[in-house]
Amino acid sequence: MVAIRFVDTTIRDGHLSLWASGMTTGMMLPAVGALDRAGFDAIEILSDGQMGKAVRDLKDDPFERMRMAAERAPDTPLRLIAGRIATFEYEPPEAFALFLKLAARNGIAEVRISDPWNEYAGWKRRVDAAHAARLRVILNLVYSISPVHTDAYYAERCRQAASLGVYRLCFKDPGGLLTPERTKALVPVMLENAGATPVEFHTHCTTGLGPHCCLAAIEGGMTIVNAALPPLSDGSSNPSVFDVAANASALGHEPDLDLESLRPVSAHFETVAKREGFPVGRPVAFDAGQHRHQVPGGMISNLAFQLRKVGMEDRLADTLEETVRVRAELGYPVMVTPLSQFVGSQAAINVIAGERYREVTDQVIEYALGYYGGTAIEAMDPDIRRRILERRRTEEVRRGDGPEPTLDDLRERFGGKGVTDEDMMLRWLFGADAVEAQRKAGPPVPYPSGRHPVVDLVDRLAQRDDRALIAVERPGLKLRLERGAR
Image 1: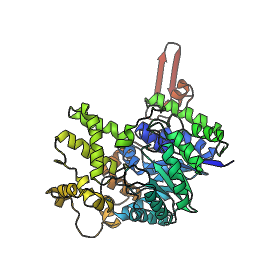
Image 2: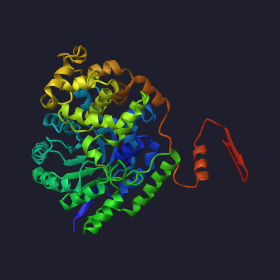
Image 3: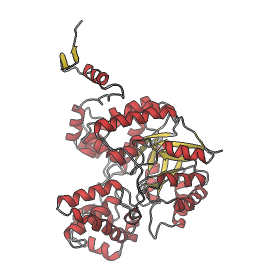
Image 4: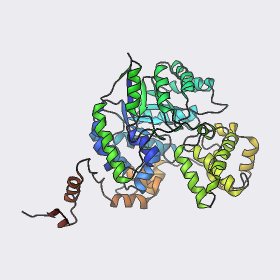
């Protein structure tokens, strides 16, 4: 009997995949204590890409989210996902290094890192920065399907990743592209070439095969699985921890987790989903088309929105087919942020413009210049690369050969008296106006529990200090709250 351990992804990947990162810190916090006590190996709490949504839309401070979650989870490491922090802009190395130090200062213990090309140089720079911040590093090997992504490719990249002295590797399938057969073939390759470095397994349910792939990974020797709690599992999210644990038990393994203590956590998130109108993750039917275009589920809805804005909503199938051509011409980048967005956006532009590469985004020009990994320069179709770089815009986009921006440069521009490094970082990423608006909104608002709605209403009204008297009347109910009354 083998013990199977779990990393919780509910309030990070499940939240991103199904609720478009729309959950506030207040909605998360009631669950964190129970997640801590259940026995997870780690709890994923935030990704670099979710920070903008938190600040701009939810009026939440990401660093405060880290701190408040860490207070409620003293026994379980909190994990941050940080491949890039400035997702679509240039990111000075010193800024990335400072971000990791700030994350560690605010309660993060582990960081899961990707490079969009699975490229050693990109990994090393990020891993060195994380180690300098005294964070444990989980290094992703991202799965993809192409003529390039062979068993030999993953064997070589796995050896390179393990050579960096990281805490763990993670075989990561963000698009839900793995099949049980491919999982059975690649898991032994990963485990053999990782040597003594433990390997986690991470997949999605986008094609309906996620739970089956988890079992194939466990049968192949993986003992650490990433999973989420319903209603934030399934769909385009990760497999349900309850399903994976039950199936692992049926195979004779022992899930190392207090599953019963997690059922009230699921009930809390079901209440949040019902009150906020958030979707509930459900198992999906197998979709063979996903393996061809490899566009992540959340991106498909965004492409549909772009096409609808120009009255071309009937061209979604054409756009997905165009992504197949664009990806091949760009050298088969892994369809993960930000490269998946570059491929999808360019495909949509090609369809909308009616002529391929007549218009090109600045990000695709930067990609062709090698700013998102040197592999692109060698891997791209040379005719397409030449066509992109011959544009006048290239010289405007091309970065100068001057020195890298330093932290002093950033502090001079975005800091000032009384501005913490955390605030300076958020101002650089999202603008001073967005940060100021977030600060004015105040601390996270406590979210009502799953108790009776009237009890929750009284609880919330009692916390308000902007009214001296609150009265509610309806047939059969009179409620009066008066501040200072005896």
